[in-house]
Length: 353
Image (cartoon, rainbow, N blue to C red; front, side, top):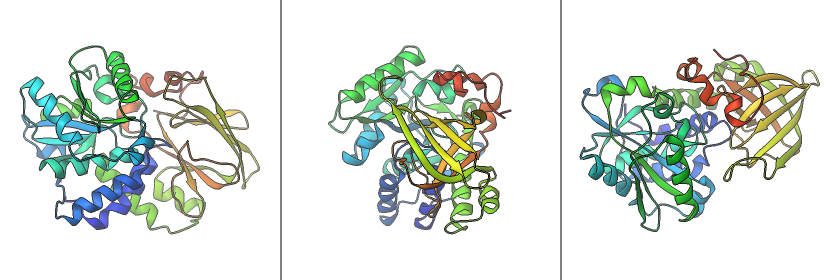
């Protein structure tokens, strides 16, 4: 399929929902995608199975402080520079690109990259949702590894991380973006299409598009049951945010820990969300009710627009929703990568797998 201008609102909404409160603002990426479509570049989105097994697919995305991305827009050469760097290092040319993360702005920006580079876009990603760290990507969870990888920042600097553990690549990338403008274009080494089925989450762009279409069709302030049906998930609570607490110094650099508390209008119960860069755990009257790797999102009750962790405020009427995790993450071999304890929360996964 080809992405057209009419698809952008639905894709943006679906990607924002799958961001689980993180992943960055999708609005700027949507503007960039619309401008590219206006120039006649409609990216071709191809299922993994349609690619020759030897086709080389380069995963790309934005890493770093996504808020800085909206303040310091790309000049247009960053992704080309990152992809060229991994091509030179590996000696392999890219035949297509894919996203490292469907949740948030990375659900849209790699489509822009595909158009800029004149490459096909693969309907898959390495997350199936929004994730905060590179060492949580599917290629890391399956043992394939992240290195080699390249980063290119808006000032023109390019860094190639040739080798190292996944944790080392994560730390190196975070140090690079912290000292060079806040964000960078990121590209992994080409992956043969025939190997993607084992180390990626397939069909995520088409799924995000379908999700966005179903939700947008509801209009404003939909009934609780209709919203749950459109999400193919559940509505955990609908109510007014009573408190937002942010805990400075209780998480790693670049991550902000906090909690959100609201009263459910239906039964008066209190729902508390524990969050870092994403919403991670929901507790109803103190008892765990839902958790990562399922996708927890907070929607403005009237508009249905997802509310990110850094934008949530007291007094807002919201719906807290839960979408099922991609089957990739419910595999017992991979569940530890995204379970609450992976974020320092002493709780077993709730209702997963």
